[in-house]
Image 1 (cartoon, rainbow, N blue to C red):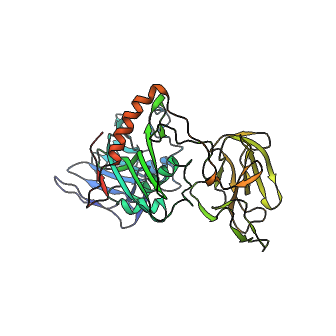
Image 2: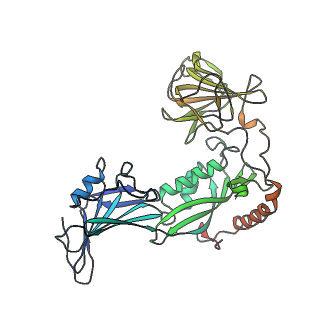
Image 3: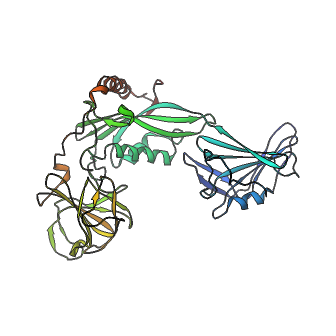
Length: 418
């Protein structure tokens, strides 16, 4: 342990070895080879981290604390000793360098700071709330390759870190999950515009909040989305007040890429012959969850020749979907079982005539394989009549935010507060 005592000042000296700590809201580099000692006139504060595989008791013992138990904590305190993640940072305050800690603080969540204060022979617990203010931002740009790369190019690290930029891309893809398959529908020249909340804490930390409005322009077609909490449930609607939710998802796996497209004549990688492909292959890591594209009933779940492990679902209006080459099936997925849209039904594998792990997905109408991109899936449910007026006011407000011209010098520009 190294430290320096300074009258009237503070100094931090740490080892050169660092650990990248992934908080729920940002990534922070913290020294862990040695605890950090901060010394003032009398008191000393040491910042230490929970190491991989270490228990909280071991960390506390390292700092000389043997009598602090979390067993009786109020359930409202977000610090479950059984679920603590490595990298969690604790600060130990000592009244003098050679004394035992009398105050321990830990940032358990983005919204809570927990303080343990020694009083005589016991520890008292207090919880401080961390205030975050929402700062609305507008982003726009071209999508030349992937949605994430487009957002990554528009937003700097000082605005959102890489993990938060990725979450923004994923959330935007989720909003349009019923209209767009981002693995194969994107073309050069497509564009996006987003109005989002960027949250800033009283300590200056930054994290992504939520998307409140967006517009995608793909192949010249514009698709808008506006967040509205009619009936107490937040939902995204188009400009006409119709829900973006449809009967079928455009893609049955997340975080995906396409290895072959529908109806392309190709040389079969195992059989070595050329034949028409009856579906779409999604290359993904083994074990990736596969989702039901829509509500339905399981027709079969088992081995099916070249499909390997196959789940086939029956939906309304003569539609069936098939999910092949699965490594295994989700619990409860068997013939006759009902499944909901987005429910996990199996896991990506390479069973049957597959040269590598991927999902083979088919969308069939009255027994005929169709390209799901070319099937009209109808309109979403309209907003309730009682919420129509409020929705239109909110839509117009958000549309004005979307239409603000970005600053010519900065691609990410602040807009007026809500």
